[in-house]
Length: 252
Image 1 (tube, helix red, strand yellow):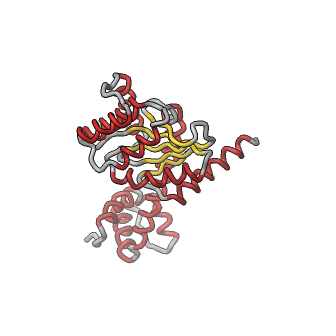
Image 2 (tube, one colour):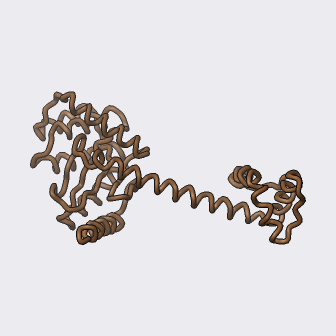
Image 3 (tube, one colour):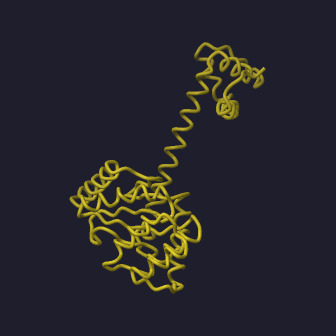
């Protein structure tokens, strides 16, 4: 009878059984008695796992490690292929130094509570690092209010009101029509949304899907995509690492 293992371990047994014949020499070399027929190999493997269930854990850990390495490599390759779209300002808002030597890309929804948490982190980075450029990719995924807020930001464009409107939208506790109308009036933003604004938002949505971004915020710096909110120090370290990398490449 098959020994009782945790659910995750039982799932891994299928892969272990599939590799039974390949494992037979290793089992034999370890002093395990393995008969030639495949049925006996399977029985020997079950017996071995019954006596040493930690082998399942170790095998699963190795499978997980390899999967994570493959996923990270695929992610870096995708970031490289999508570089043009990632750093395109279409559907985006630029904060900080527009000519900064390091760009931090942030996929953001103004109605997202986790995006509200990252706002002071971004502001602190802008204040401390005058060489950083923040590229807000407008990704409204939490309803009509989010979409209207993103539209407002893009219709406003890049001007001296942009940083203040960004803060106002992030500070808003609700994004209902009266709130948005009041913000439009205060910041002199036109109420009509040009078709190219919605087209730009569609492009950002398509980009987020291609990159496997499933929620907001998501931060990209160089070859690193970090999902979720990030604290001040880790973000500052990533920026410094990217700056050092660019300097090293420039000196080659």
